[in-house]
Image 1 (tube, rainbow, N blue to C red):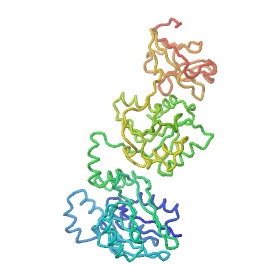
Image 2 (tube, rainbow, N blue to C red; image 1 turned 45 degrees about the vertical axis):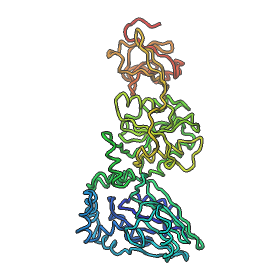
Image 3 (tube, helix red, strand yellow; image 1 turned 60 degrees about the vertical axis):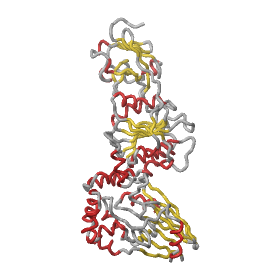
Image 4 (cartoon, helix red, strand yellow; image 1 turned 60 degrees about the horizontal axis):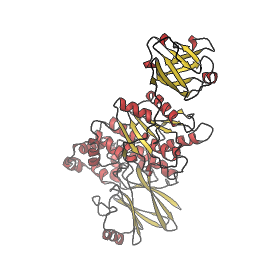
Length: 527
């Protein structure tokens, strides 16, 4: 059996081409590559793509954009008839970006070519044998396919040009279009290509969509000084007109762009393979991504603790970070999965209140918030289990966001996320009643009382917990003797209780949910 990769419409998008080649190589389909034309235009790497196409295993035909770019006649007349200034600018830039050697190579390519594989004749053309202006697609009338089949001198006819993946079997002739590698226009920005299999005279075709680093091509377009709309064409997977309209509709809140970092927060622990598998999924889809662990030691099924970990970590990561958070006791039930832009960060996880604190903070500060329900399985793993959505849904979605996939591709917008009813400090006549929300790895007791509401004079604060009273707030652990019980404002800005060089939780017998009374107005002990 022979496997052949079939590509079309790369359009100067080298990151997409490289992702497709990795995908095809993993399927042993790069011994022969059939390229159906349009190597240039719309993308920032035309010279690199043309140079790649000169490889001996690549069989190419000339595309219509390539023809316009290298044609002196087109440069002197047809370019100026293009109504859109941006497109004229792209034509001119692409011509300048191509070396004389690359232009000569493109000029040498035929309009069509026939190859034979295991006795099967395969004809390549960019648009049609009738020329590069005909559009053949899923909606082409049946009689036109019959005409082409009757005149065909090949068992297989391959076309590009329309940016639509399809195949048709008509009167013994297989017609196929692999879809565009570099410039999709169906709203899905992933690269498209096909693999032909030839075995004992039988031909099969399978189409693939391949994720790639969309931000890399966007950076290339911007570094080349090309109009921003072409970066939006790449990110949105739309043609020029649709991308421009979609971009204009964003208004004053532009689409957030990813930073290339994905953070993980789970209750999985580190004994099992779960965390490593999630990282494998993420880096398979977005190999350029840096994956960072926040914690995997959230108490099992403790969504509230996960929400606090998440809220305390987020401010320390750069804008565009993707946070994949999985504390998911409802996995496999009808609970929704969410993806969100909250402020300048992305979030992915179950809709169970895990995002409560980051949402409340964003709403309080009037930061942008957009939430979608995860309902498009194209961006999940092919097989979804009922017990590991962290691997099968949330990790792939996070990776696609890191690649640059727009949030809106993942599902419909929602405005009713599940929110936790978290305990808040209560004012009392003499101060505050707070609660222990976390026992950290040192046995320190972290509370839900923010330090900035305590008196500026630390000596006026008395903390009562577990039968002990602690007078004053300490700045640093080393300011007190080992074994001393101290109260302090911790690194997250909340009141905490600790035993110097010891374990306050064990000494006091207090855990999560324990009450803390804070006296701030009088030296009279609280009862």
